[in-house]
Length: 118
Image (tube, rainbow, N blue to C red; front, side, top):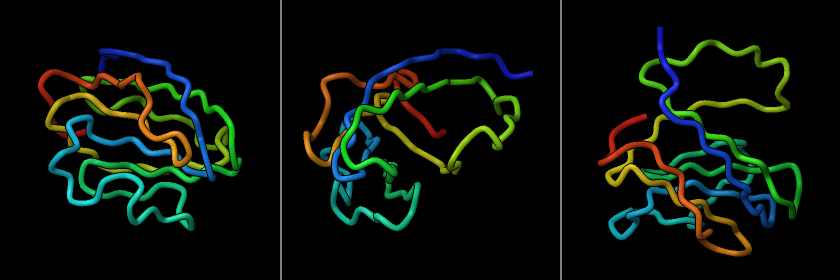
């Protein structure tokens, strides 16, 4: 059974209904945030980047990230308004949080050292 390795809470600023999670070492990303953001999809992806569309225009979202050493236990999706999954690859193991209106946040999400696929 998978074990929880790390759990991190951050407050993320959402602007213009948009929030981005992007590889912190983003110099070589082919499509940096917010380029090609898809407002018609709850969760869309680009290499090293996850884009999330929110129902609220401007607000602070409570984000909780869990890192597991294997597939996490199943959750009942009935308690969520929206749910999606995507693969994410990070070379640094750090994820920057981006707002469409405020840019990159100071806090980063720590996945692992040095990086990998999730």
